[in-house]
Length: 208
Image (cartoon, rainbow, N blue to C red; front, top):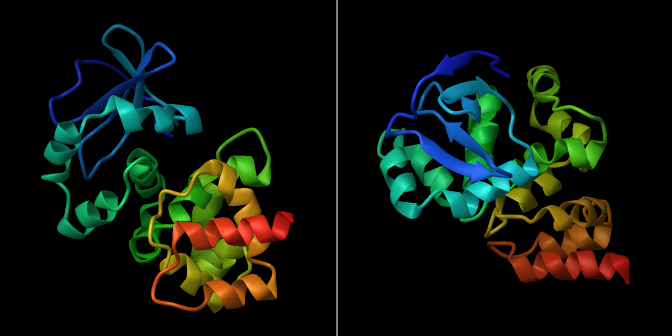
């Protein structure tokens, strides 16, 4: 996390929104940084939590996103465009672990698990440095294992075929558990895409 502090107004290309009375800001590509304004005009590097990132879904207008995406590479713009409610979390994940860009572009559904890693694994702080180290050492399958997911090609294939990567936080724990069940892997392993309805059924079947 960048701890620098600056006394500037937000440039027009940046994305700004308000959460819990504080203004947040994501700076322009490629040097994306996340800042918070504790006093007027004083921006400090900070890591937004799940709630602050979620607030951006309503706080950043489609027009602001369109302007922002004009200045990012086409493949990154296409990736971010797949998200409706989790576009800011996706940008946050890219900015925190640029080493994972290729994996995230291939598997957008990983974003939800990565951004929620503190909730899924426990602990008090973010672990982006550890995530980068795990990926560098053990690749994507090591990362799946670190997230508590089955480290298998079947799991990766299912995640890559998820139709809508805007996975809600409440679904992640049950889905992670469901993916350990052979019958769930078999049912989700069929078809060209994995729909929201299929994911919900898999989680419901596990809870029944």
